[in-house]
Length: 87
Image (cartoon, rainbow, N blue to C red; front, side):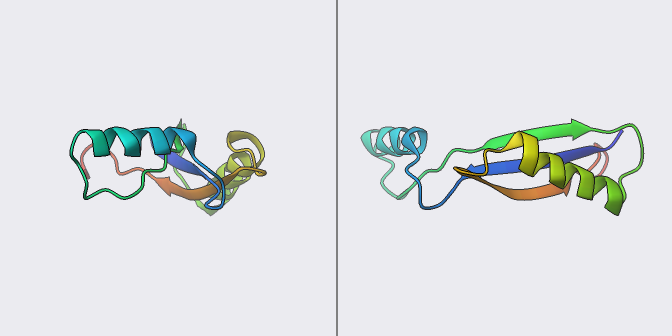
């Protein structure tokens, strides 16, 4: 069964407290080559039929309406995950 992956991130102009905390922890661990960390959400939607353009459009609509808060988050991608044999 195909899986559609939706990735949601905080809007770029907003503070990401979780990301800042992780970035601070990396610095404390001596990992100074990382200047910023942003933390988002990933949704995996398994479907019971082949993925076509209409189904992807439906999932994009769900991503905007249900999976994300459009005031503070952006849907950054909606993709079909490679099947187990393709990875």
